[in-house]
Amino acid sequence: MGMLMVKCPQTGHAIPTGIKTDRESFRSSTVFFSRTRCPFCRTDHAWFARDAWVDEPSIRARRRLVCLNVGIGH
Image (cartoon, rainbow, N blue to C red; front, side, top):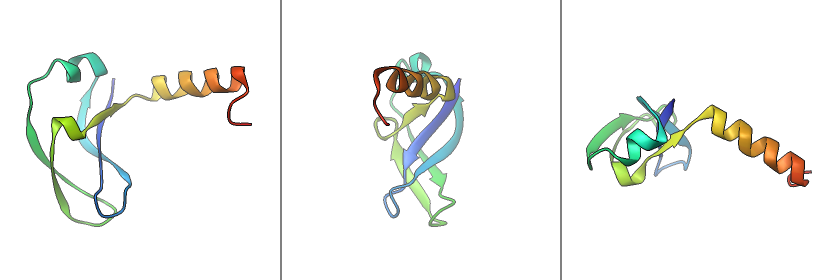
């Protein structure tokens, strides 16, 4: 499970939407529109599902480990 994230158009920061999901469930969901309050610029951002991604900590950790094993990022 991870957090559905969108990018703040003002600052470029990744912001959490408050929606927890996994990548497979998100990929198979219907197209939807939502709004999220941005903690960086304190504005409500409207976004579509195509603008969002799932941030899964376990995936990030695995990628980091792979990069370390092949010498990337040193």
